[in-house]
Image (cartoon, rainbow, N blue to C red; front, side):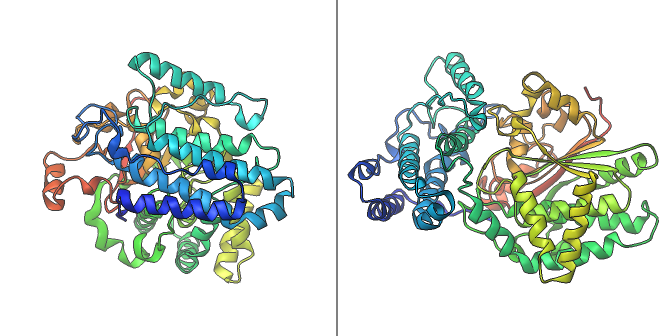
Length: 495
Protein backbone atom coordinates (compact mmCIF):
# COMPACT_ATOMS: atom_id res chain seq x y z
CA UNK A 1 0.00 0.00 0.00
CA UNK A 2 1.32 3.48 -0.85
CA UNK A 3 1.15 5.93 2.00
CA UNK A 4 0.01 9.41 0.93
CA UNK A 5 2.46 12.00 2.24
CA UNK A 6 0.89 14.95 4.05
CA UNK A 7 1.91 18.40 2.94
CA UNK A 8 3.36 20.66 5.59
CA UNK A 9 0.26 22.84 5.68
CA UNK A 10 -1.94 19.81 6.25
CA UNK A 11 0.24 18.66 9.11
CA UNK A 12 0.07 22.05 10.82
CA UNK A 13 -3.73 21.86 10.67
CA UNK A 14 -3.66 18.39 12.27
CA UNK A 15 -1.29 19.62 14.96
CA UNK A 16 -3.58 22.51 15.82
CA UNK A 17 -6.65 20.31 15.92
CA UNK A 18 -5.00 17.83 18.27
CA UNK A 19 -3.82 20.70 20.43
CA UNK A 20 -7.40 21.93 20.75
CA UNK A 21 -8.69 18.47 21.65
CA UNK A 22 -6.10 17.90 24.35
CA UNK A 23 -6.30 21.41 25.75
CA UNK A 24 -10.05 21.06 26.12
CA UNK A 25 -9.78 17.71 27.87
CA UNK A 26 -6.90 18.61 30.18
CA UNK A 27 -7.79 22.23 31.05
CA UNK A 28 -4.24 23.13 31.98
CA UNK A 29 -2.20 26.05 30.68
CA UNK A 30 0.98 24.13 31.41
CA UNK A 31 0.04 21.42 28.96
CA UNK A 32 -1.20 23.98 26.43
CA UNK A 33 2.27 25.48 26.27
CA UNK A 34 3.69 22.14 25.20
CA UNK A 35 1.47 22.00 22.12
CA UNK A 36 2.89 25.02 20.34
CA UNK A 37 3.25 24.74 16.58
CA UNK A 38 6.85 24.02 15.59
CA UNK A 39 8.79 24.86 12.47
CA UNK A 40 8.47 22.77 9.32
CA UNK A 41 11.31 20.36 8.49
CA UNK A 42 11.65 22.40 5.28
CA UNK A 43 13.41 24.96 7.51
CA UNK A 44 16.07 22.50 8.64
CA UNK A 45 19.49 23.53 7.38
CA UNK A 46 22.15 21.16 6.10
CA UNK A 47 19.94 18.51 4.48
CA UNK A 48 20.90 17.30 1.02
CA UNK A 49 18.49 17.45 -1.93
CA UNK A 50 19.59 14.06 -3.28
CA UNK A 51 18.72 10.37 -3.08
CA UNK A 52 20.69 8.14 -0.72
CA UNK A 53 24.14 7.50 -2.24
CA UNK A 54 25.04 3.89 -2.94
CA UNK A 55 26.85 2.42 0.05
CA UNK A 56 25.52 5.02 2.51
CA UNK A 57 23.22 4.24 5.41
CA UNK A 58 19.63 5.38 5.00
CA UNK A 59 19.08 8.77 6.63
CA UNK A 60 16.64 11.64 6.79
CA UNK A 61 19.39 13.99 5.65
CA UNK A 62 18.71 12.92 2.05
CA UNK A 63 15.55 14.80 1.04
CA UNK A 64 14.76 12.43 -1.85
CA UNK A 65 14.83 9.35 0.37
CA UNK A 66 12.06 7.50 2.16
CA UNK A 67 13.87 8.05 5.44
CA UNK A 68 13.38 11.80 5.02
CA UNK A 69 9.69 11.39 4.17
CA UNK A 70 9.23 9.17 7.20
CA UNK A 71 10.82 11.56 9.65
CA UNK A 72 9.16 14.63 8.09
CA UNK A 73 5.63 13.28 7.74
CA UNK A 74 4.91 9.77 8.94
CA UNK A 75 6.69 9.82 12.31
CA UNK A 76 5.09 13.09 13.56
CA UNK A 77 1.65 11.86 12.51
CA UNK A 78 2.18 8.58 14.40
CA UNK A 79 2.97 10.53 17.57
CA UNK A 80 -0.01 12.82 16.97
CA UNK A 81 -2.29 9.78 16.76
CA UNK A 82 -0.90 8.40 20.02
CA UNK A 83 -1.77 11.68 21.74
CA UNK A 84 -5.21 11.68 20.15
CA UNK A 85 -5.86 8.09 21.27
CA UNK A 86 -4.85 8.91 24.85
CA UNK A 87 -7.13 11.96 24.86
CA UNK A 88 -10.07 10.09 23.33
CA UNK A 89 -9.71 7.15 25.72
CA UNK A 90 -8.99 9.24 28.82
CA UNK A 91 -12.00 8.05 30.82
CA UNK A 92 -11.51 4.36 30.08
CA UNK A 93 -7.80 4.61 30.89
CA UNK A 94 -8.56 6.21 34.27
CA UNK A 95 -11.21 3.56 34.97
CA UNK A 96 -8.67 0.81 34.26
CA UNK A 97 -5.56 2.25 35.90
CA UNK A 98 -7.09 4.32 38.71
CA UNK A 99 -7.84 7.95 39.44
CA UNK A 100 -4.16 8.55 40.17
CA UNK A 101 -3.48 7.95 36.48
CA UNK A 102 -5.32 11.14 35.50
CA UNK A 103 -2.42 13.49 36.23
CA UNK A 104 0.05 11.02 34.74
CA UNK A 105 -1.99 10.89 31.56
CA UNK A 106 -1.62 14.65 31.14
CA UNK A 107 2.09 14.27 31.78
CA UNK A 108 2.38 11.48 29.20
CA UNK A 109 0.59 13.47 26.51
CA UNK A 110 2.74 16.50 27.20
CA UNK A 111 5.93 14.46 27.00
CA UNK A 112 4.87 12.89 23.70
CA UNK A 113 4.13 16.35 22.34
CA UNK A 114 7.61 17.42 23.42
CA UNK A 115 9.11 14.37 21.70
CA UNK A 116 7.32 15.27 18.49
CA UNK A 117 8.56 18.86 18.70
CA UNK A 118 12.15 17.70 19.13
CA UNK A 119 11.81 15.45 16.09
CA UNK A 120 10.26 18.11 13.83
CA UNK A 121 12.90 20.71 14.72
CA UNK A 122 15.81 18.28 14.35
CA UNK A 123 17.03 18.50 17.93
CA UNK A 124 19.75 16.11 19.18
CA UNK A 125 18.47 12.80 20.53
CA UNK A 126 18.15 13.12 24.31
CA UNK A 127 19.79 10.51 26.49
CA UNK A 128 17.29 8.20 28.16
CA UNK A 129 16.63 8.60 31.88
CA UNK A 130 18.34 5.95 33.97
CA UNK A 131 16.02 4.40 36.52
CA UNK A 132 15.56 1.35 38.71
CA UNK A 133 12.64 0.23 36.57
CA UNK A 134 13.28 -3.18 35.06
CA UNK A 135 11.35 -2.08 31.95
CA UNK A 136 13.82 0.74 31.56
CA UNK A 137 16.83 -1.52 32.04
CA UNK A 138 18.37 -0.98 28.59
CA UNK A 139 18.54 2.82 28.90
CA UNK A 140 22.28 2.72 29.54
CA UNK A 141 22.80 0.66 26.39
CA UNK A 142 20.86 3.19 24.30
CA UNK A 143 22.78 6.07 25.83
CA UNK A 144 26.09 4.41 25.05
CA UNK A 145 24.98 3.94 21.45
CA UNK A 146 24.02 7.61 21.10
CA UNK A 147 27.27 8.79 22.67
CA UNK A 148 29.37 6.47 20.50
CA UNK A 149 27.55 7.68 17.40
CA UNK A 150 28.20 11.32 18.33
CA UNK A 151 31.91 10.57 18.84
CA UNK A 152 32.24 8.64 15.58
CA UNK A 153 30.45 11.35 13.57
CA UNK A 154 32.10 14.23 15.45
CA UNK A 155 28.70 15.91 15.66
CA UNK A 156 25.48 15.78 17.69
CA UNK A 157 23.10 12.94 16.88
CA UNK A 158 20.09 14.76 15.43
CA UNK A 159 16.83 13.32 14.12
CA UNK A 160 17.30 14.05 10.44
CA UNK A 161 21.07 13.92 10.13
CA UNK A 162 21.79 10.61 11.83
CA UNK A 163 21.02 7.08 10.61
CA UNK A 164 17.31 6.57 9.95
CA UNK A 165 17.38 3.18 11.70
CA UNK A 166 18.81 4.70 14.88
CA UNK A 167 16.46 7.69 15.17
CA UNK A 168 13.32 5.79 14.13
CA UNK A 169 13.88 3.00 16.65
CA UNK A 170 14.84 5.60 19.26
CA UNK A 171 11.43 7.23 18.78
CA UNK A 172 9.67 4.05 19.88
CA UNK A 173 12.13 3.46 22.72
CA UNK A 174 11.64 7.03 23.95
CA UNK A 175 7.88 6.55 23.71
CA UNK A 176 8.23 3.44 25.87
CA UNK A 177 10.21 5.42 28.45
CA UNK A 178 7.45 8.02 28.74
CA UNK A 179 5.08 5.32 30.00
CA UNK A 180 7.67 3.28 31.91
CA UNK A 181 8.57 6.18 34.21
CA UNK A 182 5.01 6.59 35.47
CA UNK A 183 3.66 4.83 38.53
CA UNK A 184 0.32 3.74 37.10
CA UNK A 185 0.64 3.65 33.31
CA UNK A 186 3.89 1.73 32.92
CA UNK A 187 2.11 -1.35 31.51
CA UNK A 188 -0.13 0.59 29.11
CA UNK A 189 0.32 -0.32 25.44
CA UNK A 190 -0.56 2.82 23.49
CA UNK A 191 -0.98 0.73 20.32
CA UNK A 192 -3.14 -2.02 21.81
CA UNK A 193 -6.41 -0.72 20.40
CA UNK A 194 -5.00 -0.53 16.87
CA UNK A 195 -3.49 -4.01 17.02
CA UNK A 196 -6.68 -5.60 18.26
CA UNK A 197 -8.69 -3.81 15.60
CA UNK A 198 -6.22 -5.05 12.96
CA UNK A 199 -7.26 -8.57 13.98
CA UNK A 200 -11.01 -8.11 14.40
CA UNK A 201 -11.37 -6.06 11.20
CA UNK A 202 -9.76 -8.91 9.23
CA UNK A 203 -11.92 -11.70 10.69
CA UNK A 204 -13.52 -12.62 7.37
CA UNK A 205 -10.13 -13.17 5.76
CA UNK A 206 -8.78 -14.86 8.89
CA UNK A 207 -11.74 -17.26 9.14
CA UNK A 208 -11.37 -18.25 5.48
CA UNK A 209 -7.64 -18.83 5.93
CA UNK A 210 -8.27 -20.87 9.10
CA UNK A 211 -10.47 -23.31 7.17
CA UNK A 212 -7.96 -23.42 4.29
CA UNK A 213 -5.04 -24.11 6.63
CA UNK A 214 -6.87 -26.80 8.59
CA UNK A 215 -7.78 -28.58 5.36
CA UNK A 216 -4.13 -28.58 4.32
CA UNK A 217 -2.88 -29.59 7.77
CA UNK A 218 -5.29 -32.52 7.98
CA UNK A 219 -4.16 -34.11 4.73
CA UNK A 220 -2.82 -37.63 5.25
CA UNK A 221 -0.33 -37.53 2.35
CA UNK A 222 3.33 -38.24 2.97
CA UNK A 223 4.76 -35.03 4.41
CA UNK A 224 7.32 -34.66 1.60
CA UNK A 225 4.88 -35.20 -1.24
CA UNK A 226 4.78 -32.83 -4.22
CA UNK A 227 1.23 -31.85 -3.25
CA UNK A 228 2.39 -30.79 0.21
CA UNK A 229 5.22 -28.80 -1.37
CA UNK A 230 2.66 -26.81 -3.34
CA UNK A 231 0.64 -26.24 -0.16
CA UNK A 232 3.76 -25.11 1.68
CA UNK A 233 4.62 -22.68 -1.12
CA UNK A 234 1.10 -21.23 -1.00
CA UNK A 235 1.28 -20.68 2.76
CA UNK A 236 4.72 -19.08 2.48
CA UNK A 237 3.35 -16.63 -0.08
CA UNK A 238 0.30 -15.89 2.07
CA UNK A 239 2.68 -15.27 4.95
CA UNK A 240 4.75 -12.90 2.83
CA UNK A 241 1.85 -10.83 1.54
CA UNK A 242 0.34 -10.66 5.02
CA UNK A 243 3.26 -8.32 5.71
CA UNK A 244 1.42 -5.66 3.71
CA UNK A 245 -0.85 -5.18 6.76
CA UNK A 246 1.69 -2.99 8.54
CA UNK A 247 0.32 -0.18 10.72
CA UNK A 248 3.60 1.71 10.97
CA UNK A 249 3.74 1.95 7.17
CA UNK A 250 0.13 3.13 6.94
CA UNK A 251 0.60 5.65 9.76
CA UNK A 252 -1.64 3.63 12.07
CA UNK A 253 -4.55 3.26 9.65
CA UNK A 254 -5.90 -0.31 9.53
CA UNK A 255 -5.28 -2.07 6.23
CA UNK A 256 -8.06 -4.13 4.62
CA UNK A 257 -6.59 -7.64 4.55
CA UNK A 258 -8.97 -8.88 1.86
CA UNK A 259 -7.84 -6.12 -0.52
CA UNK A 260 -4.14 -5.82 0.25
CA UNK A 261 -2.87 -9.09 1.70
CA UNK A 262 -3.36 -11.57 -1.15
CA UNK A 263 -6.24 -13.98 -0.45
CA UNK A 264 -5.73 -17.58 -1.57
CA UNK A 265 -7.52 -17.11 -4.89
CA UNK A 266 -5.27 -14.22 -5.92
CA UNK A 267 -1.81 -15.59 -5.17
CA UNK A 268 -0.93 -16.51 -8.74
CA UNK A 269 -2.11 -13.12 -10.00
CA UNK A 270 0.54 -11.27 -8.01
CA UNK A 271 3.42 -13.70 -8.56
CA UNK A 272 5.07 -11.14 -10.89
CA UNK A 273 5.39 -8.88 -7.82
CA UNK A 274 7.50 -11.50 -6.05
CA UNK A 275 10.97 -10.31 -7.02
CA UNK A 276 12.89 -13.16 -5.34
CA UNK A 277 11.36 -16.54 -4.51
CA UNK A 278 13.58 -19.07 -2.73
CA UNK A 279 10.64 -21.01 -1.26
CA UNK A 280 11.66 -24.26 -2.97
CA UNK A 281 15.10 -24.06 -1.34
CA UNK A 282 13.45 -23.65 2.08
CA UNK A 283 11.21 -26.66 1.37
CA UNK A 284 14.20 -28.78 0.33
CA UNK A 285 16.04 -27.82 3.52
CA UNK A 286 13.13 -28.73 5.80
CA UNK A 287 12.26 -32.01 4.07
CA UNK A 288 15.87 -33.17 4.31
CA UNK A 289 16.06 -32.12 7.96
CA UNK A 290 12.74 -33.82 8.76
CA UNK A 291 14.25 -37.25 8.07
CA UNK A 292 16.78 -36.76 10.86
CA UNK A 293 16.70 -35.62 14.47
CA UNK A 294 14.76 -32.84 16.17
CA UNK A 295 14.34 -29.72 14.04
CA UNK A 296 13.91 -26.21 15.47
CA UNK A 297 12.53 -23.33 13.43
CA UNK A 298 12.88 -19.80 14.79
CA UNK A 299 10.40 -17.15 13.62
CA UNK A 300 11.30 -13.52 14.30
CA UNK A 301 7.84 -11.98 14.16
CA UNK A 302 6.73 -8.66 12.77
CA UNK A 303 3.10 -7.47 12.86
CA UNK A 304 0.11 -8.48 14.98
CA UNK A 305 -3.33 -8.91 13.41
CA UNK A 306 -3.71 -10.65 10.08
CA UNK A 307 0.04 -11.14 9.57
CA UNK A 308 0.46 -12.93 12.90
CA UNK A 309 -2.38 -15.23 11.90
CA UNK A 310 -0.53 -16.12 8.68
CA UNK A 311 2.56 -16.84 10.82
CA UNK A 312 0.52 -19.27 12.90
CA UNK A 313 -0.99 -20.82 9.76
CA UNK A 314 2.43 -21.61 8.34
CA UNK A 315 3.60 -22.93 11.72
CA UNK A 316 0.56 -25.19 12.08
CA UNK A 317 1.15 -26.71 8.64
CA UNK A 318 4.88 -27.20 9.29
CA UNK A 319 4.21 -28.82 12.68
CA UNK A 320 1.39 -31.09 11.49
CA UNK A 321 3.49 -32.36 8.57
CA UNK A 322 6.51 -32.95 10.84
CA UNK A 323 8.81 -30.51 9.09
CA UNK A 324 9.76 -29.19 12.54
CA UNK A 325 9.58 -30.55 16.07
CA UNK A 326 9.77 -27.15 17.78
CA UNK A 327 8.95 -23.60 16.69
CA UNK A 328 10.11 -20.59 18.68
CA UNK A 329 8.29 -17.29 18.09
CA UNK A 330 10.35 -14.19 18.92
CA UNK A 331 8.28 -11.20 20.02
CA UNK A 332 9.09 -7.60 20.99
CA UNK A 333 9.41 -7.00 24.72
CA UNK A 334 7.48 -3.72 24.61
CA UNK A 335 5.21 -1.86 22.15
CA UNK A 336 7.15 -1.22 18.95
CA UNK A 337 6.44 0.23 15.51
CA UNK A 338 2.70 0.36 16.26
CA UNK A 339 1.77 -3.17 15.19
CA UNK A 340 4.76 -5.33 16.18
CA UNK A 341 3.82 -8.44 18.15
CA UNK A 342 4.38 -8.61 21.91
CA UNK A 343 3.82 -11.69 24.08
CA UNK A 344 0.54 -10.17 25.24
CA UNK A 345 -0.61 -9.70 21.64
CA UNK A 346 0.16 -13.32 20.86
CA UNK A 347 -1.79 -14.63 23.86
CA UNK A 348 -4.71 -12.28 23.11
CA UNK A 349 -4.87 -13.56 19.54
CA UNK A 350 -4.99 -17.20 20.65
CA UNK A 351 -7.72 -16.52 23.21
CA UNK A 352 -9.73 -14.49 20.70
CA UNK A 353 -9.71 -17.42 18.29
CA UNK A 354 -10.63 -19.94 20.99
CA UNK A 355 -13.59 -17.75 21.99
CA UNK A 356 -14.75 -17.13 18.42
CA UNK A 357 -18.24 -18.09 17.26
CA UNK A 358 -16.67 -19.46 14.07
CA UNK A 359 -16.09 -23.20 14.56
CA UNK A 360 -13.02 -23.36 12.29
CA UNK A 361 -11.42 -20.41 14.06
CA UNK A 362 -12.20 -22.04 17.41
CA UNK A 363 -10.54 -25.25 16.24
CA UNK A 364 -7.56 -23.35 14.90
CA UNK A 365 -7.15 -21.43 18.17
CA UNK A 366 -7.38 -24.58 20.27
CA UNK A 367 -4.69 -26.33 18.21
CA UNK A 368 -2.39 -23.32 18.53
CA UNK A 369 -3.10 -23.06 22.26
CA UNK A 370 -2.30 -26.74 22.74
CA UNK A 371 1.01 -26.37 20.90
CA UNK A 372 1.98 -23.49 23.15
CA UNK A 373 0.84 -25.33 26.29
CA UNK A 374 2.86 -28.42 25.37
CA UNK A 375 6.02 -26.47 24.58
CA UNK A 376 6.02 -27.50 20.93
CA UNK A 377 5.68 -23.79 20.25
CA UNK A 378 7.16 -21.17 22.54
CA UNK A 379 7.08 -17.38 22.87
CA UNK A 380 10.58 -15.97 23.20
CA UNK A 381 11.08 -12.49 24.66
CA UNK A 382 14.58 -11.20 23.85
CA UNK A 383 15.55 -7.55 24.45
CA UNK A 384 17.91 -7.39 21.47
CA UNK A 385 15.03 -6.98 19.02
CA UNK A 386 14.25 -3.55 20.52
CA UNK A 387 17.88 -2.50 20.90
CA UNK A 388 19.58 0.18 18.77
CA UNK A 389 21.76 -2.34 16.91
CA UNK A 390 21.46 -4.07 13.57
CA UNK A 391 21.95 -7.83 13.35
CA UNK A 392 25.60 -7.78 12.31
CA UNK A 393 26.32 -6.59 15.87
CA UNK A 394 24.38 -9.39 17.58
CA UNK A 395 27.37 -11.71 18.05
CA UNK A 396 29.08 -9.06 20.19
CA UNK A 397 26.11 -7.31 21.80
CA UNK A 398 23.92 -10.39 22.41
CA UNK A 399 26.13 -13.50 22.14
CA UNK A 400 23.65 -15.71 24.01
CA UNK A 401 20.91 -14.89 21.50
CA UNK A 402 23.28 -15.52 18.59
CA UNK A 403 24.12 -18.91 20.06
CA UNK A 404 20.45 -19.67 20.62
CA UNK A 405 19.59 -18.87 17.00
CA UNK A 406 22.37 -21.19 15.87
CA UNK A 407 20.39 -24.10 17.37
CA UNK A 408 17.70 -23.63 14.72
CA UNK A 409 17.71 -25.38 11.36
CA UNK A 410 16.02 -22.33 9.87
CA UNK A 411 15.41 -18.74 11.00
CA UNK A 412 12.46 -16.95 9.40
CA UNK A 413 12.77 -13.16 9.58
CA UNK A 414 9.46 -11.38 9.02
CA UNK A 415 8.90 -7.90 7.72
CA UNK A 416 10.60 -4.74 6.62
CA UNK A 417 12.33 -3.68 9.84
CA UNK A 418 13.97 -7.08 10.29
CA UNK A 419 15.11 -6.89 6.67
CA UNK A 420 16.59 -3.45 7.22
CA UNK A 421 18.44 -4.69 10.29
CA UNK A 422 19.75 -7.69 8.34
CA UNK A 423 21.05 -5.31 5.64
CA UNK A 424 22.38 -2.76 8.14
CA UNK A 425 20.04 -0.19 6.54
CA UNK A 426 22.70 0.35 3.88
CA UNK A 427 21.82 1.42 0.35
CA UNK A 428 23.47 -1.57 -1.28
CA UNK A 429 23.69 -2.04 -5.02
CA UNK A 430 20.53 -3.97 -5.83
CA UNK A 431 22.55 -6.83 -7.35
CA UNK A 432 24.53 -7.39 -4.12
CA UNK A 433 24.28 -11.00 -2.95
CA UNK A 434 22.54 -11.67 0.35
CA UNK A 435 25.52 -13.14 2.21
CA UNK A 436 27.62 -10.05 1.46
CA UNK A 437 24.85 -7.75 2.71
CA UNK A 438 24.51 -9.80 5.93
CA UNK A 439 28.06 -8.71 6.87
CA UNK A 440 28.92 -11.79 8.90
CA UNK A 441 25.51 -12.46 10.44
CA UNK A 442 25.36 -16.22 9.86
CA UNK A 443 23.99 -18.06 12.94
CA UNK A 444 22.09 -20.56 10.74
CA UNK A 445 20.14 -20.94 7.51
CA UNK A 446 17.75 -18.04 7.15
CA UNK A 447 14.98 -16.71 4.98
CA UNK A 448 13.52 -13.21 5.02
CA UNK A 449 9.88 -12.62 4.03
CA UNK A 450 9.36 -8.95 3.38
CA UNK A 451 7.21 -6.63 1.32
CA UNK A 452 9.30 -3.66 0.20
CA UNK A 453 8.57 -0.60 2.35
CA UNK A 454 12.01 1.01 2.58
CA UNK A 455 14.54 1.92 -0.08
CA UNK A 456 16.93 -0.99 0.38
CA UNK A 457 16.86 -4.27 -1.55
CA UNK A 458 19.53 -6.78 -2.58
CA UNK A 459 19.76 -9.94 -4.66
CA UNK A 460 18.06 -8.68 -7.81
CA UNK A 461 19.16 -9.76 -11.28
CA UNK A 462 21.14 -7.20 -13.29
CA UNK A 463 18.80 -4.70 -14.92
CA UNK A 464 15.76 -5.59 -12.81
CA UNK A 465 15.95 -2.48 -10.61
CA UNK A 466 16.37 -0.28 -13.70
CA UNK A 467 13.29 -1.88 -15.28
CA UNK A 468 11.24 -1.24 -12.13
CA UNK A 469 12.44 2.36 -11.89
CA UNK A 470 11.46 2.90 -15.51
CA UNK A 471 8.08 1.24 -15.00
CA UNK A 472 7.27 3.36 -11.92
CA UNK A 473 8.99 6.58 -12.91
CA UNK A 474 11.38 6.41 -9.96
CA UNK A 475 12.01 4.49 -6.75
CA UNK A 476 8.42 4.17 -5.53
CA UNK A 477 8.58 0.40 -6.16
CA UNK A 478 10.99 0.17 -3.22
CA UNK A 479 8.60 1.65 -0.66
CA UNK A 480 5.02 0.99 -1.75
CA UNK A 481 4.58 -2.55 -0.37
CA UNK A 482 3.54 -3.69 -3.86
CA UNK A 483 6.58 -5.94 -4.26
CA UNK A 484 8.01 -8.63 -2.02
CA UNK A 485 10.86 -11.09 -1.57
CA UNK A 486 11.26 -14.55 -0.09
CA UNK A 487 15.02 -14.42 0.04
CA UNK A 488 17.01 -17.25 1.63
CA UNK A 489 20.59 -18.09 2.47
CA UNK A 490 20.68 -21.89 2.72
CA UNK A 491 23.53 -24.29 3.40
CA UNK A 492 26.18 -21.60 3.23
CA UNK A 493 28.94 -21.66 5.83
CA UNK A 494 27.55 -20.46 9.16
CA UNK A 495 29.24 -19.24 12.32
